[in-house]
Length: 191
Image (cartoon, rainbow, N blue to C red):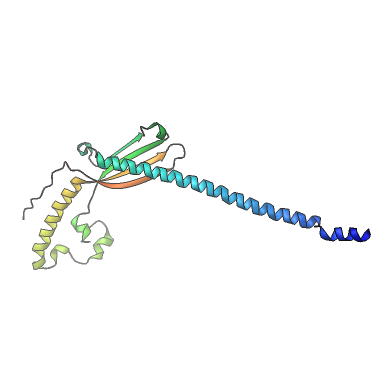
């Protein structure tokens, strides 16, 4: 009988071995459950961002199909509204429309008198005073550029749609260019 007790004692685990195994198992299961929790929350965040993006795309498409009337817009226009659909009651959208501004001729060519000293120093001379042969062409380029600038600034507008979840304050924005087809384009350039 003494020999059978010895055999039984040799086949089992000691209390310390069992405690070490339970501790290791607890660490691994805690790490696994924590990572799964982060995966679930990241998935929910990704799903919400995807929904916000789809709502923004929908509003942008509505702008393309039914562009706003530009006659009341001077420089910038901003309005915030709630979605009309009952399933989107927790969301709001903001539409911002701004005029396109193109830098003037001197700024584009880095002439002296441009907006920044760095831009002015980047080009040593004056584009319009580079010699007699280029002066006529430079003046003509400037006149054409100014007419083109006026026309583009009248017909092209920048629009930004931002959709915000009222509860989480998470938002998503998309920008696009809108064309004002009602504005006449001036094509005559006098030299």
